[in-house]
Structure formats: structure tokens, C-alpha cells
Length: 146
Image (cartoon, rainbow, N blue to C red; front, side, top):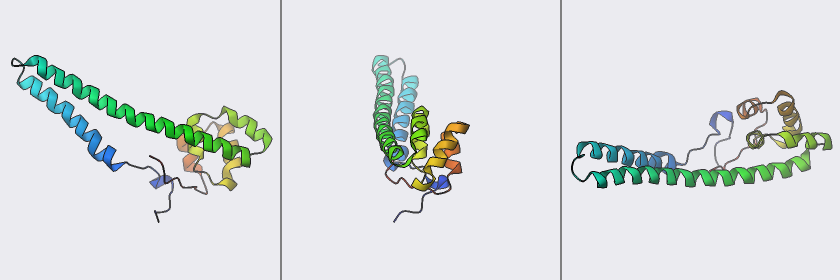
């Protein structure tokens, strides 16, 4: 079973992305720029093309990751809105429509019993996602975050 989740340890790394793919793409850009500078007169078009494609590849891979995170955030928002309907009183449910997506995503870590008060506090004090996570008394873990 995973370690109990809290504000201090809830950040999740994808080892393949964070420690292999992204660094490899950055090294590719650096090497392509280095080789272009050091071999400028000879086959400059080929080396410039390599630099261009290195940058495009890095952007493409990053964008693909961003798309998966956006889809995940939309699913979290939907799950939380369903949870809001089940757990919030009608007045607070109506006010919850003004929460930002970032606030809703942060509220996913709030346990059910604490949710109404945390939503009220978030709305009244306009808490940031970081402030929401830091003030949670009863943490609801999310081990499936990409």
C-alpha cells in the first residue's frame, strides 16, 4: 500500500517523463545547437534542420503530455462536481459554480466530511489551490494522478 498522502508528499512524478523523455529531448536540442555551431560552414542547412526538428519534437512531446493532463483535469472537475452535488447544501452548491478549475482540482484532496466547510472557506476567502491544500485537516488521497 502506498504511503499515506499529505500536502508534503502529494506531488507525483512520472519517472519516464520527468527523468528520461524530457531530459533526453533537452539534450537533443543542446547537441543539435552545439553541432550546428561547430560545423557551421559544412552542411549548414542539414544542421539547422536538425535544430528545428529537435525543437519541434520537444514541443510535440510536451504538448502531448499537456493534453493528457488537461483531459485528466476535466475528469477531476466532473468527479468533483458530482461529489459537490452529493455533499453540499443547495446554497453552497449554487455558489460553488464560481470556483475556478484549479480550486476544484485542489478540493479533490478534501475528505467528504470537511468538504462543505472547505468549499465555503474557499469561496469566502478566495483561497488559492496551494492554500486549499495547506489547510486541509483530513486528506483524501489521489494516487492515480498522472
